[in-house]
Amino acid sequence: MNKVIGLTGGIASGKTTVSNYLKDQGFVVLDADEYSRKTTAKDGPAIPQIVEAFGQDILDEDGNLNRAKLGQIIFNDKSKRQILNEIVHPLIRQMMNADQEKYIKEGHVFLDIPLLFENGLDKNCDLIITVYVDEKVQMERLQARNNLSSEEAKSRIDSQMSLLEKKNMSDIVFDNNGDLPSLYKQVDKFANELKSM
Ligand code: ATP
Image (cartoon, rainbow, N blue to C red; front, side):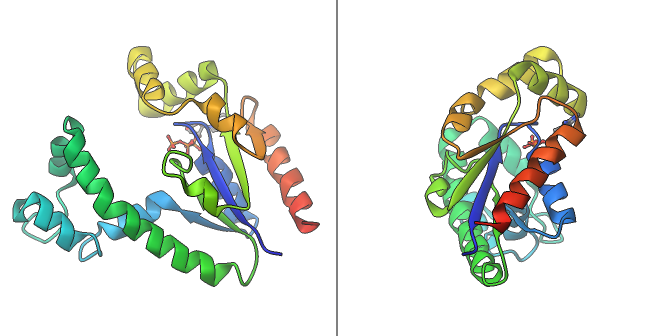
């Protein structure tokens, strides 16, 4: 039976790296961030409700969402952030579900969802994989990738659900403390096991 496999992790833990590798191996990976961008693209399904909630000024003269402006509005205002999430999340889910139903007929489907547990989407998966790193390695990679000070990196990590907690709630853990070949080896092993599931 084809499986729906949730792929999650923490900031800079290596989800995208695993996703890209799975795609290279021919697996279908549906990326929640990509769907999020689609819902808020020009004429995307979230735009009418966003305009209703935040005003016409939230679009630029070409009809594109002014992401910087929206970012400023929601950055320090929890209730506005919640309004945006309540608009966007159901649309993301609808679009992902439709694609999941389409692709599951052909094979296993991976769902790359950073906030899988936080949004209760773990319930929709047959298996859950967390890409795990120790905080020290996570800090180093996050700082290097985003050019952040250690204080900034630490505060971004601390604002998320603990990665250790996610690891403990998962069926499978890819340990990404080592180099890329070591990560890919774990993915290959899992892909091989999937054949007999
Ligand atoms: P986010 O959710 O924050 O976008 P992510 O979980 O998708 O992050 P990646 O972007 O895959 O994480 O990885 C974070 C950074 O660490 C990237 O710069 C990536 O190239 C690097 N990286 C990932 N795995 C390894 C590894 N095993 N060795 C060295 N660098 C790595």
